[in-house]
Length: 87
Image (cartoon, rainbow, N blue to C red; front, side, top):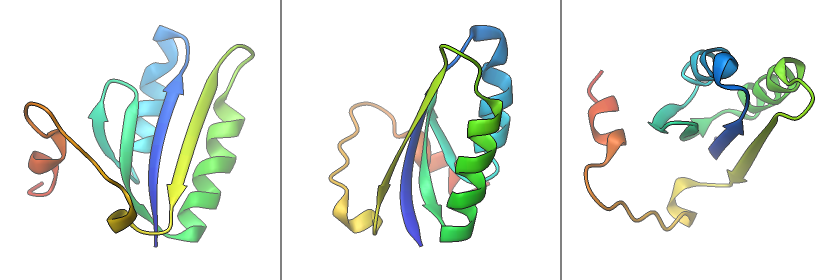
């Protein structure tokens, strides 16, 4: 498994496409920020599909870490991932 943080910057009317796709694999933690663990195969499919969705001037950044334990994550306020664990 690989821990992934994905962020995107796309036209406002196209955010739904990216949000709905990334929700299949990751937890939606902020407007255009997702995180979670995926397999290498899921990561490959995610990268390919996101690249196919992008239009000129848009971008997506995917950060990968070998395990969640290597991420120092500080949350101020309510943690949006807490509710997602019980869905």
